[in-house]
Length: 384
Ligand SMILES: [Zn+2]
Image (cartoon, rainbow, N blue to C red):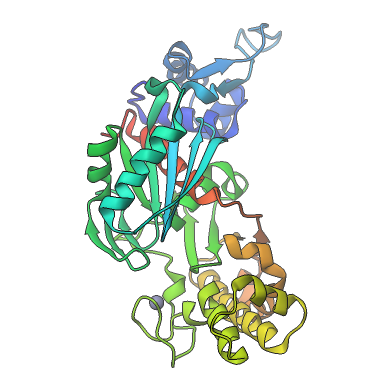
């Protein structure tokens, strides 16, 4: 990656990555930079092969000699690896500079201890990059659930993986020999939405993830909210759940005690007195109108709706995008979720639009790749 050096160059490159093909004049208008500043910023990127100019007619009549051809990023000029770590499983992707997934992989983990996981990541990177030009690999982004210090690359606590104070980025850099960025999984997804999803049309949005965990990523005033201590948007642990139930985090009454997929399954199992009942069977029962299964999803939907109203009342985003594996069965949550949201949202904040986006198992890994991409672009060079 060429060093971008100036904030203007970073801004221009970001604009081309996320909105290309786009002519210089439009970049100037959107960024507030002068046409000359845009041209100056983009020249070394064209020369280094990261940005291409479309068409052959360089000058259009009436534009005072200014080139009007749109610019776009050369997608495979840089390749990014992204991996999501789940308990017992790794999901990986290779993307180009515009975050299009080019390759994907999934692997079972024999154990979740750091040494086993790091070794499995190294193997997955080798497999994912086989036959590719390694000089173009800009590094690896890793997404982990829990309390993650993205700047230091340290997993401070991941309850699901049983990790505490793990310097994961440093350990991976040692074995993989490439730059590594580690990020909280929901924040990584939010970074991807900012550059390549809902963030293209709004200046403030929240991502709410439903499924194994309930999370929230916030994008406000031009940037993703990180929190003074690296924690923000942990709506899964708002006290909106059942006060009699203990959350996986050890606290009582968290939203996840009623709204995570595990909590929904436990509720349906208990009611059916069937401890082995599978998630697939739980979904089947709910879709067929089994009262206990329907009630479990309704309870989850209500709680998530209250959490959404809480987010909107606090920070007032323009849009909430619901994502995550739970979206596949959104019909089971949706009515109660929207009803609870409208019951609790305050005043004009009710105008906040709620949308959903279909979920693919590679989305989390792609988010990790985008976290790396942003780090590479913003630091102006490789993140070592
Ligand atoms: Zn909790």
